[in-house]
Image 1 (cartoon, rainbow over the protein chains, first blue to last red):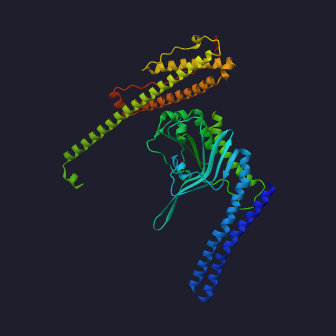
Image 2: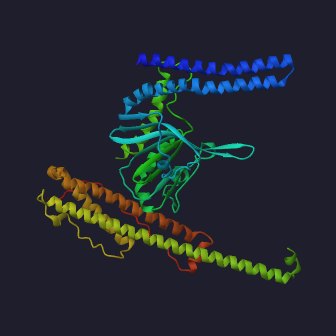
Length: 294
Length: 189
């Protein structure tokens, strides 16, 4: 492991150096443009030097910095993150560059898909005998009018898919109520009804939509509702669940992309603690919703 | 606006009165339909309880039949003859549910006393199915009570309560199962 950390540190420094080297032509271009522009009293010189420097930066960033950065991130994930995952889960298959299909996520009807969909860190593993898949997703909708571009953040966080003990053949959505920027955009399929449980507290904290009231109450037992309250405290983001097509989708909108490497020096334990904290969220979700309810 | 200004005060008063009457009629229609829809939902949920009770009874009976091969108990000592007839009242259903709870306890006691029974795959599958059927019964009961609660709340809320009185609606009964005292049930086997 120490060897891997040394290799990783070399890659990190190479990546940071590549960034600095990429920036140099831009800085030089702007300074040269300013100096020569002043000497010859010609603004066009400043403009051309500046543009030339900027174009050089773009080219260097794309062909020099970006591959270095990608190597660093990839090695960090396959060496360090994978090591941490193997310590907690069994049968780990970790693909840092992949994520769930757009269609699969769309069928859960939790959030709109938007026009910009990407993600990473797709993983399949087992935890205490429960097989699950997860990835990080970033779903946005970018709207350009003539003068401006607005980006709507539909979802940014963790998405987990697993089997649930109880099988239902209808759709059920449970969404934590949030407001402001902490809230993911809503979506639900047509012809679902709002379900109110007998717990006023639960109804205040969560919204439930289902196309079959019986199945909603079959899933939402008092113990399950209590488990959701516990998760609300530990999740550090908005929780959304969807039971559809025999699977349980758990989406955690926490505005974070987990398992990303640090820019600064890799201190011996700090980055591991950060990775383990992200893994703990997954284990807590599975413990509360599946294991403890058996 | 010009048209309204050209009318006399009597005409305006008549128009306003007609508008109010129409709005009241509309509210009456909407509220009556709402009550009717709620009653249909209660009926649906009620039949959901019937389905769940029947399923639970069938599974418990099968479990007792399976137990015969492994135990020496007399089936009639713990088998309850339960008449699951159609159109039972809520009170009847509560009584049936309580009898099924007793039967379920007896099946559990059998399983505790006879390890061979407990290790039988068929019996084990039946016990899982019984547990699932009990959860379905709970779900059916809670859905029914939720629909009854909405109906009863609307009945007592003003001004819908006036319409409820006119229609002579009665509050629906909740399905409240008696809490079974968990005690050591001795079964003569």
